[in-house]
Length: 179
Image (cartoon, rainbow, N blue to C red; front, side):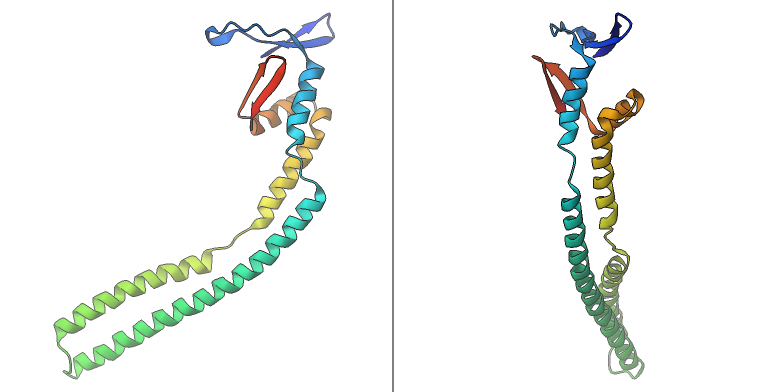
């Protein structure tokens, strides 16, 4: 759709007939299109009470998840240390001649592979941090922008629409959008 100014003060939108289409849609006033877009964006507005509840629920969930992550980290560290103790004890047995070098090499290689897997798990557990605050902030920011949409200047409206709307079409006097 393209905008056209009529009588130096009214803005109408109409189909450009681009890409070989033969658009039969009538001209649409800017106010009507803005109203339709405001309605679509209104569905993205999340009330403050819901974001407050969501923040509290996610914080509670995060504390539960943190405890579970700390427990898993303790178990993985203990398993890593246990394997390390086995390798050291087995090395002493090799030095004392109680086991052969080939047996030591075979078992030590197996246990070191287990240690590598455990070390990867330990690193993941140490560095995994969910930041729900960013997600809640994005929801609140999107809600605020959608509320302000009707009062924003056209350049800001266009910017917001480019971010939030993937596809839009005017068919049979109705706006169809894909967010």
